[in-house]
Length: 465
Image 1 (cartoon, one colour):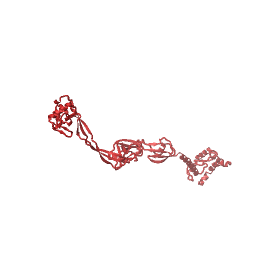
Image 2: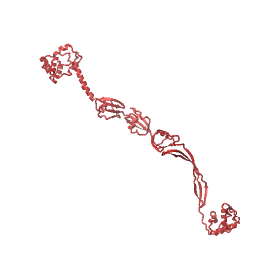
Image 3: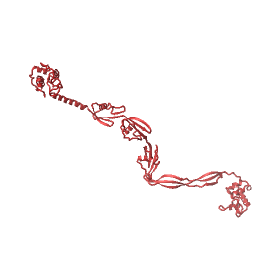
Image 4: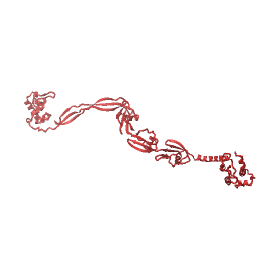
């Protein structure tokens, strides 16, 4: 509410401008206010101006608590159009009051207009962007249109090794997302050789992916899900060995860092049974390229001895006459232990030889074969000139009474009864005198035409000694 003093001191100046502003709406005749008042409404100075001083309209608070300067915030349009409004502002500056609405109403209307205009603009231009910085996600309100604008609004400054997606110049729309990852030092030592890399990964596994080593068979000193601190991380790695597991004809190639064959099998889900055979042994240390053979047995292994037949070797003896044989070593069979068990092959139980071991080597027999060539003998020589005593020594040891009962041979020259009789002898050759036996032997030599081999195949050669 305004005070009465205010109403009295500004009565003429308040009414004059108000009527022209209302007449067009009513469509009636002009107001009967005096010329001075009409001139004020048309923008001309009135007959007198109030003295300057502290009064409403001079910039000081009025009785309703609003500043007088608020009366210049807006003026209603009158018959004079825009010029009329400018005239009103000039009057205010010259100290002449114009037709004003309630100052509180003017301020409220202006504020409402600003809220409507300004608030609507903010609503239209505000971009709600999701910003993820190293896994920390938040919503950023920005009036900018690019990724760089979003980072600026959020106070995020990229470092030399940081990464952002999309690119800084990419234009964004309401509801889009921006991803920021900080660069981190990642030192990887593989079998004693170290290399340091800059990565934007949050975990060790992501870092291995970025380095293109996620598929490498490496044993890491930390879990692949471990986080990488902003100040970096050092990780040691051991390169795996490539081994092959053969199990009942199934071949499995695998990479391992295990310390024993048993651990390799365990890592691949294989637990050998009670009777299964594993080669090499379970406590063997794996090597690159090693083949591990696992044989699953259906029964307990059994072992039996099997003889190894000895052979007979023949050796030439140059000191033994050609055609003669002499056994110098008898053969002896050896012994082999064979271990077998039942296994499943192609759907059928089959006996499988697990192991063969020679426990006793065979001893081969030896037979000597004579290769000595006898000198050619002139069989045309006269019988009396031959060395009959040498023949007798070879045949009977020089004993005229010698009898070989097993073969039926008698005397010095081992006559058979048939040959003795054919040479004219009678009775037993062993009963005849040495002289008669020699005479009958010479006669036999002549009878066969000197073919002594037919009569004395082994000792006849001594006739020519």
